[in-house]
Image (cartoon, rainbow, N blue to C red; front, side, top):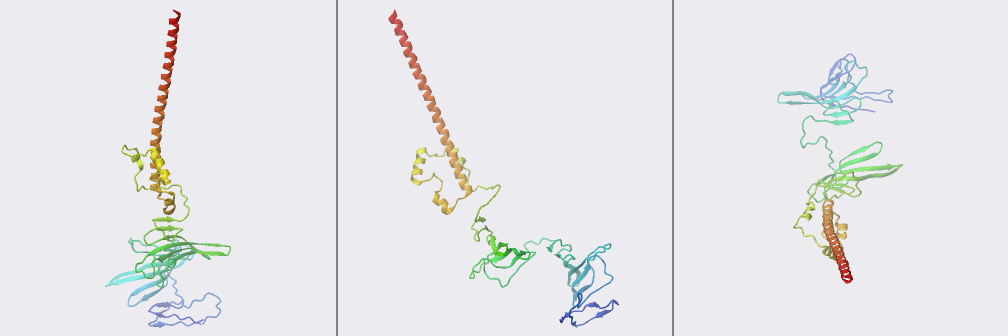
Length: 345
């Protein structure tokens, strides 16, 4: 297999252990036929025997014009007293403007364990991005697909996978083909692969351009739209309607029981409560409905208080009636006794 490396730069190559310097001005071509190599074989090897173990210096390829522009260095990241080699790669760039030379600055590093760091020289995960200053509205990572079509289910994506795809986050353009208004959104998908039966990726959540979030639906019509059941330990609702303590104010016009009965007879539901048909077609607003139900509870409380007063009055009347009857009975007894005494005389 023939491999050709074209290097249109000036750089130094250490060819042998004798450390002889070779300078090539122009194009360097390396031709080598490799047939069934018995060991890993390199067409080009950069080596220095006096590198230091500081993780920043080592054999390098430098890209330059009349000044250095960029550099790729092989570094040994181990400490001085370590016997374990830890080789890595460091990628550096240089800013030289109007005589002010900033020197080479590290931009990316591949460590010995395969982690890649951009903006950090000590990445702890496979790919770590870091920025010391505030980025404001700028992005740290941008995925772009120039050939993307205006579909709600395809676009630049991040896929999470092992040997098969597990989940995916897509950036989608939700506008129609003839629309000039961009409508960017995010789609979150998961995948079920069970005993060779691949269900493919299924959408689980979507954030559309106006910020609405849909779970189980691709067309959320509120800040959070869920098609399905919700299991929560606690739900807190900020009221957009007043609490019905107005029921207890003197000026509140409480319907009589007869008026409530007549409304139920005509409408088939309680006053100030939507009908079953309206609730089935339009749903209910939980906060507002809870306040309506509380209003009815407070009205029932007033009815109960009024009934209790009536019952108490009736009891008092019954007691008075009973006492009156007893007095009459006693008067009759006394009258009979008096009549008996008079007759005996």
